[in-house]
Image 1 (cartoon, rainbow, N blue to C red):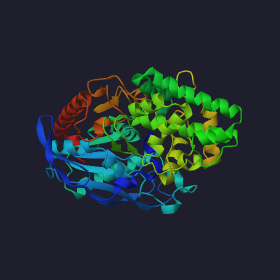
Image 2 (tube, helix red, strand yellow):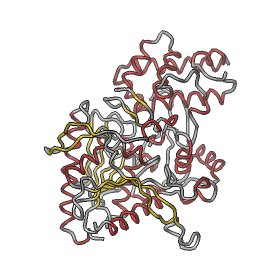
Image 3 (cartoon, rainbow, N blue to C red):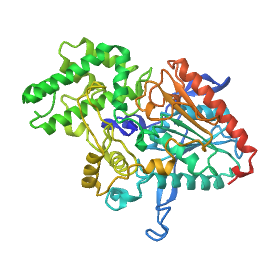
Image 4 (tube, one colour):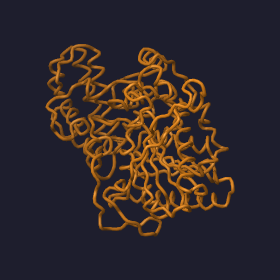
Amino acid sequence: MAARLLFLGFMLLILGGKAETRLSVEKLNNEVIPSHRDLAADFKEMYFKQILDHFNYNSLGNGTYNQRYLITDQYWKKGYGPIFFYTGNEGDIWEFARNSGFITELAAVQGALVIFAEHRYYGESLPFGKDSFNIPEVGLLTVEQALADYAVMITELKKELGAQTCPVIVFGGSYGGMLSVYMRIRYPNIVAGALAASAPILSTAGLGDSTQFFRDVTADFQKINPACRDAVKGAFQKLNTLAQQKDYSRIQSAFSLCKTPSTPKDIHQLNGLLRNAFTMLAMLDYPYSTHFMGSMPAFPVKVACEIMRNGTDLMMALRDTVGIVYNSTGQLTCYDLYSLYVECADPTGCGLGFNSNAWDYQACTEIEMCYESNNVTDMFPAMTFTEQQREQYCSKRWGVLARPGWLKTQFWGQDLSTASNIIFSNGDLDPWANGGIRKTLSPSLIAINIPEGAHHLDLRESNPADPESVIVARKKESEIIAQWVKAARKEPSCVI
């Protein structure tokens, strides 16, 4: 979910150019497949003429927009192999293709066609161009419209490619994983199965504890060393004391702020910016350096804890810790509170730019993100975000009233017993994990837990630093998906 936090345009560093093939091989499910430095390099960028409004025949007639998608048939057994379809989420689709190499690796093993579809209102798939976030144009940004986009795209591309009898498996991570679940539920006639990685389908439907998310972020740091948690908590307490004393100049100096804060609003913004960095560190706690939603070192939580514990001044140590996220290049000489972080309807952060507008709107309508920190069960300052606060913000920002419980009504919430063929994978290091399905619900609703996994680690391409737990998880996912494809071939209903 905080995969929407495309900080400081870091993704621009990885969007250009194609990488060379690495001369080595990996093994998946006992089969040898090629390994790439950049498994997205072979994708072709295409545009699909998509319907603007799938559910109202009068408002926009037969209006269309250009929806971007990426496709590779490099490994496809044409007309026979399955279709692996990534249900794009809240960002530029290249960002997800470049960081979901497992799908391409699996395609090499199972002879699949691979498609990554961009979500409407994100990346370059803007239905009304620069006016897409005007009111009422933004009103066509809904989960239901996005799912219909994918259903129409899959159906039409299968016809164009002569793939009518090829089973479709959908994949997604985070919000994209939620969409994969919903695709299997809503369009089982089109989708034979879904791998939903790190998909918080419960917490975003208003189910669960509002303190869970930041409690689990804290737990990641506590696992490294309880002294790390205590140091972070102590740094925030010092900041709070100085704020109460209105010693703003010292706060400015300690955190290298571009401007001296002068109001409680500025302090609130600073707390949000600082807390947001820890969210990113916990989510992206991969065992190797990455360039996904920013540049992160290997084991960033461990790196952060070392900085916090070794600092001679807690607040300066806190500044240096969040610098892992906000100043990975070391080029910033000061931190601008209001340009680095924008408060929105998602307390875990919406990011910056057009993509952040889109996610903010979704968090104001269907997707419930009322998470809060309390400084009791977590190490952060008490920062509430209630349904009332959400309603007030969204009414002012977008002129809309949220609909609490709508995702639960529309997509079943935790009442999934009649669904089938869905894998719910979650990593124990991921603060989103406990907002999703952690227990197997039936023989075809399978939970795979990855003890050493961060945010949808299993979707990333194989890496020598991978823990054994994610290697085992990918092998199991591969086997289950192969079974789904085999079963779908025997069912006449799989033909569109």
